[in-house]
Image (cartoon, rainbow over all chains, first blue to last red; front, side, top):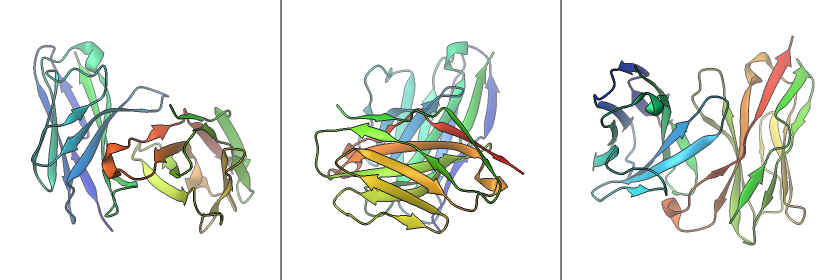
Length: 116
Length: 117
């Protein structure tokens, strides 16, 4: 079946540096991908919707300049955390809908970001 | 605005037994989707089951079935013949109908299911 591959699975970076997280759809084209953030023992919080060939749609309260999203092709979306701070440490998850577009059926493995 | 409530933060079930996870939601819409997702210790989310609100028949996927009560706005998940691999966090989620990706998923707070051998 369809697979979404997310890399890296874990990353540790220093404060002030930038980190890029990739999300690839391996055997299907995803015109839309979603980026979530999950704090320990909490639910998923949608950060933004990534749209191929156009600007991402950010949720209220999410800093666009800090969390840069690029969806340059039908199989790749990236999330770059710029000028990372310890409070950005979290678990980030990407997902893609199925062909009908109504069901988020495919999730990446997640990325645990630790900013030191 | 729509909300999803999971009132059971934790549940436990014996292996091979049946367990039901509760979910209620609030909406003024008549057409929508409801989902159950599983997040095992690996933390990769897995779609368990999906229900379209316009369908009266309850969705089933192997050992997983739902009890969808539209009037009561209730959407419980029943896991039959529980297995050790079913141990995970389970999230109930809602999405408005139509609009494709413009409608975001609204998640409940989750129920952590433990399976006792």
